[in-house]
Length: 108
Length: 120
Image (cartoon, rainbow over all chains, first blue to last red; front, top):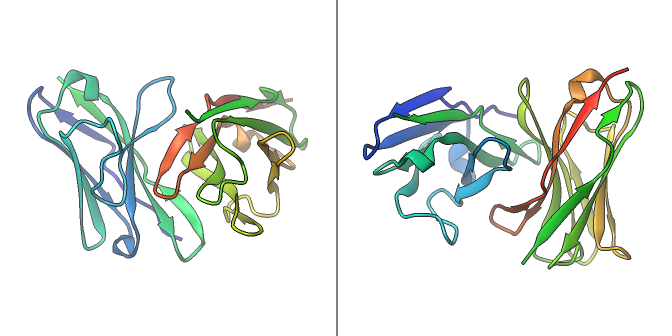
C-alpha cells in the first residue's frame, strides 16, 4: 500500500489562494478526491476524479494532478473555508481506499 | 434524498465485538451503482477505510488490510440496512465510525458518525 502525504497546515489570508498538496507513490495511476471537514461534521467532497466539482461546491475549489502529486486549490479563500482537508484515492495494489494525512487550513 | 442513520453502542470492552448498523433511506442497499462502506476516524490513525459491500449481480465484499480477518460488512436487503462487525477490539479501535455511500465516483453520503470507545 502507500501513504498519501499532505502538509499538516496551511495558512492563508482572506481573498488569497490556498494550495494543498497530496503525494503518494503511483498516485497518478488512480483518481483523487478531496474532502473538507469542519468540526463535529462528517467529511464533504469538494473535488472528485482529480478535478470535478460535486453539485453545490463553489467554483473557487479546483483540483489538479501532475505525476504522483495531486493539488487542491482554493482561490479567493473565504473564512468559511477554514477546515481540515483530506485527499483520498483508490489503491489498486491492496484493493482499498486510502486517505491523506490531512491539512488544516487556517484563514486569517 | 439519501440519508444514512447509524445505530450501535458507544462503549465496548476490550476483546468484545463491535456491532454497528446503518439504515438507508432514499436508496437501496442493492443499488447496482453504489457501494456501502464503513470508515472510521481517530486522532492517531486519521481517516481509515474499513470495508465495503456492493451488489453487481451478486454481492461483493472488500476489506482493508489493517482489519482483514476481524471485520465483516454485511447487507440486509429485508431491512435496507448494512452493518459492521469488528471482532476482538482493543483500545486502538477507539474512533468515530461512519457509514458512507460511494455513488460510483466519490463518498457522497455520510452517516452522522458514532463515537466508539473501547475501555474496560
